[in-house]
Length: 425
Image (cartoon, rainbow, N blue to C red; front, side, top):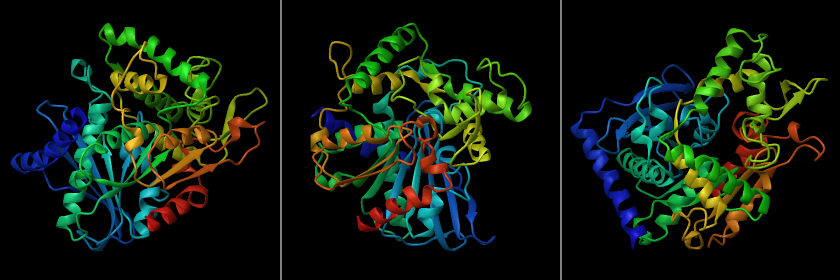
């Protein structure tokens, strides 16, 4: 009953948010041409929506769509909403290079693409009091995801594309949040549900690899005391942005973040040696990295295999300063799956999730480990695509967690198979 009440509240707040936005006279959406002529072909609409009474209770909503005329979105029977992961909001995660991006690719093939900025991505860097972040966890973002889905469906109805259910894509932490949303949505009547298919991208919520489960337990136990002592904000986004700024300002200077690296090498390491930023042995998977890379004779990063440095820098530049630690604790608790350490309730009904599933993985990221969670669902229509381009002897060169969106060959290995699945569902 609690799950049902939670989702009904989600739906109610979503419609309330629309009314609240109207009462507050939210400005017209920002319109940005992404592809085509000055009159527009594929554009992005962006606006913000209150989801609560606090000054930071605001989400961002994006729409990337083909237009038939300036300001007139083309009608589309295919709609999808993209949920980002840690550190980066929608634009940084999915539109770091608009000329080479999944949303523009999908929109160019007639898909109506939507996205969310979870509320923590909009917290200003100048913030000093983080008490409001204390209990912003996975359920907070799952609630806001429900709001964004309802808004997208409502706007699609108003612009001629109908009120049909949407596909949902969740990358990284956004995939875990999406699992939590679908877990709750599975407990309400089918007519009130909003999602008709799910694409978890390079992530697991549960794992059958004991070392990875235990690592999640250890991360949880290591993080909890700081949260209990009043540190409610992760500053990983500040760290990534600082590394970016130093790489741009003084690429050959010594990195103050990674001793023995230059600032440029540290920036490359964010992409190709991401595992360095976790305590040894406590990363989500071994050799975890965003972008496959190359090393010099000294074992230091000196290039990228599948994308350009400029795209990696654009990703780093878009970092959101803060993220709630409660969310990280919640996710690790779900993966740890040990009631003696911690327990969450947003994974209680995974076997009731019965929408079609397409799992996308990168062997340099979560890869095949993400498939296990899909086996716990009630879905009978489940398929997967895992990009594996390198031998096991070259793990750092492998297609990475963010190469799924940044790589020059991402269209061939990821986007086209995804589009084919979307068109069939």
